[in-house]
Length: 312
Length: 278
Image 1 (tube, rainbow over the protein chains, first blue to last red):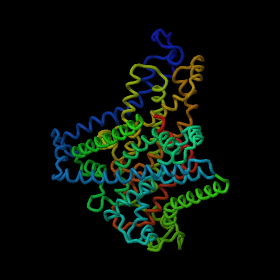
Image 2: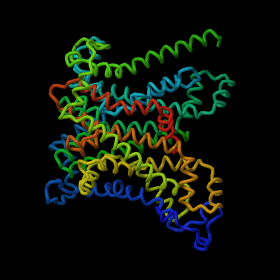
Image 3: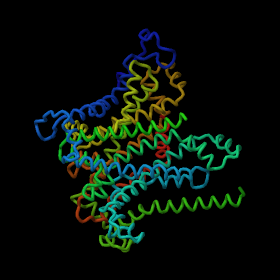
Image 4: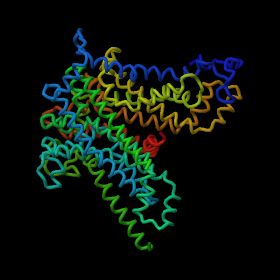
């Protein structure tokens, strides 16, 4: 960095059009020097892999084999054939991802919003509650997964004990889905709640007061002031939650290990196993691009849905 | 609304929030409690909240186990999370500053491309980044869990938003005093940005400490694992020893819980605000 510190301002003749203030005494390459370290990382681990991943998906690619024959779109064709081995496994995994996303996302929107509404006032201990509800999220999925596998154990688990049940939460369908969704709600509810809470606090008080003066009921105010005020936050939360749920891995890996019969093995779990355990990287890359296409379509739908509503 | 009903509502609110909070934390209490049980106690069908007998045997056993060198994992995790968070700051801060304040050709293009990758599902990076890390001979070593994730756009985006909120006058004053860009950045901007830098460091540290999917595939030998990846190895075990596992989970949680207790406000505000200013 000594190059940067040594630079002395030139006459300024090199940038005659530069406006007064910030852009004046600066060599042309200074901004690029500021950017270079990050852009190097960005190029190698973000831009390159996107292209390289697609390239890989067009090959029969095993890291341990010297020959990596080009197969065109065959990997994709195999995956779109549900009767084939790869296609069968892949769509079972996509089904698992879809089920988990469909059941977890609504809960992860509605419950955090309720918690945020309850905490959106001035009262003693508010920050303490906020800290408590957020606390599980700072733990990693390794801790959360093993802890709940223990609590959900069919024989010695606390959950069955206190509910007086005899349910195999980690191996039977549909209880596995209740377990996976429930654990995820416990783990990440606080995250969405604090984001909603921050959004609620950005809604100007005057709007509520004006509505109150107009005699609007609490429910009317919620519909007419709170919900519209939360729209930008909600778009963000819905989108981020869909992406997070669709990338669920650790809960399934640690709590159910895919049981029963790989029916809770999510798409990203299958991609990791296929590419990084069996080293069938061509197929795994093709899978990841198909999953990514679904995720981007879901994001587009979310943005579209919220944009339409704001126009009305 | 009368004062009485308002007080009643408030009491009810507290009751609901307190009961839910207690239920919310109870799994963590049980985790700690189980880590102080004997092997038999942890496997008992009778839930015991206060271990009887109370023993630190599980900690003793897991800390001395040759198959699961948990202290090594702890040190690896600490090195990885610290290294990663530092790398994020060192690379993202100057880049974010250039994108927020400097004028140059290609600025908008670079910013647009960087932000666009926030919308790329990270799953497409998994396989190729493994291949790239393999080419660099980083598989099974700490750089693999320190470096690639620092390419994420979040840090740049987050700091740029913060730099844009800083008043420009101080920088202009420093410029009139003859400071060059780098001096302005290090001696004027960075000190002003300390809250944002601390928040980004904490978030990067936490994310890296807790990362699970990537380390379990890219780290292989027992002595190079991070804590979550090491614990993950117990997954296939036939006879899970929950006393040991809960002791391991407590050890893996201690640093993040400690960080959280100290810096709770920064963490929560950083996270809750990070998505809003897009």
